[in-house]
Length: 317
Figure 1 (cartoon, rainbow, N blue to C red):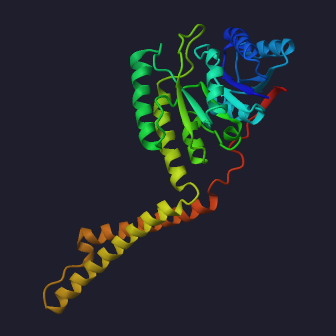
Figure 2 (figure 1 turned 45 degrees about the vertical axis):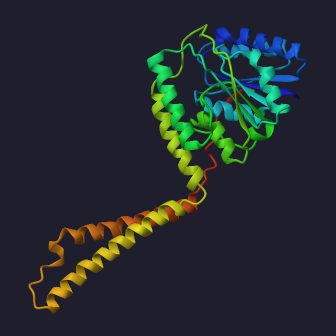
Figure 3 (figure 1 turned 30 degrees about the vertical axis):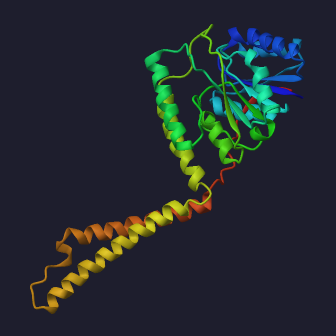
């Protein structure tokens, strides 16, 4: 199979049929063998009924329905698990991503050898102050931290080699950082293609301003995991050891100063009368706690088996 199109959605009943027919037109004109996997993220409207109707009429349509709303990352994770195409395309269900971009994305993967190609919505039809400006700041930070030179990390329109989606783990709200996850997994040829961004035709955006705050927190988490996720002792152990050593040296200095004063017959204050003593003890205690945290982190590192266990109510294969 040439292409799997994975579409996460939440309450998009009005756009699904038009989106599929548009994808079908593009795929048929390019003679692609394809499948379209709709992942219903706990919609409360008639989205799943529309998917069932499309599946009954078109064998290319497949679907996954969550019992409740989990988020975009879990939807992509399950869509990636089900995908069979050599190239996997992701796009949003709101018709703001154009299926006309699919052939060019496919060629960049197959002919130019990219592992991942991300869309860049250079001209956007989103509100300037609530989405465009925060998005630019967010992307600038993500480029700096991740080292992946993309203009638009959060663009839903992306293309992947099949091996990429089968070897990365998308969980929580990490869909923003799939290029970073791919790079960390050893897929280094990451490209970008300018794509057309269309104004929303139906409904309203499901994402609020809080996604940018969550995005920064996720970026810090991902940076830490990529650097120290396998070996947390390298972070906590080193920091804890340095802190303990400084505290221990400070305690020795406080004690030595008292012994020096006694030796020279001078009045020596109690070591507990100086703030340095308490700061030294605090540094030793914190250093010990950091070290223990690193040790415990080593024991539990990436051991959760329930992280991507989602309740799927129905599935169309």
